[in-house]
Image 1 (cartoon, rainbow, N blue to C red):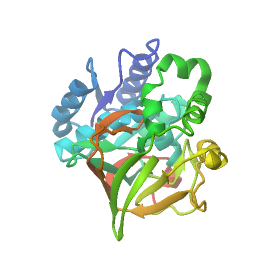
Image 2: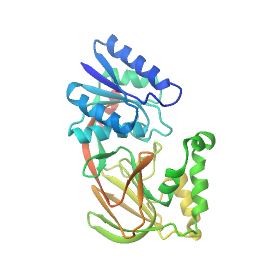
Image 3: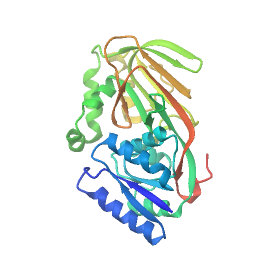
Length: 298
């Protein structure tokens, strides 16, 4: 069998390339062949993977949700998905943690070589031209995240996000948006909205249900008195039972801005396209290499 190994050659200190070399060696020892799928930027990486989809039996992605997004986007644009193996290398690795994939690099490679698969869902927007692997957000907190530099995140860790968010409370940073989802239709002043393809954030469940749908939390009409609820959301994600949030489970989420101001999304940890957008959940879209005990679970 023939595999592709995707990684960002410009990331970090070259660890991804070393992992790619080790993964290729393991494939060769198992009687398979493997080639590297790299490019100098995300757009070219998507094109590289798209061209390889019809020639490969599977793809391994080294990195976090942002790297997985490049592979998922290539699958969407190609109209075809391949079995995907993940060697986690991001800051949070939400998608890998949700599906109980090993965080240890050697163990992750062994799972891929073993070849056990299950189909998992992802989401898409921009007429299925852009993937949402784990999370889609917009609003003030997304704006803050889009502005946080990698150097700040490395220096201060994830605490940099709530610190910056708290500074925004009381400011006029809500966006008027028309929201449509299944039987739901409202016009809200949205401070922040989060849609996830799984029931977890950072590998920790934040809602009780785990349906194959989008899990959508919308914080609206925020003000200082709701600060405690915001802090609770930032650190736990658990807002389903709060009266400060609207929570939805849906297969499709349509977002229409009611302002001339650009409202940019944030997808899988990177800046995304501006509204209007429709986000749809694609159940069982992608085969994923998982530990043997996970292959038949729902």
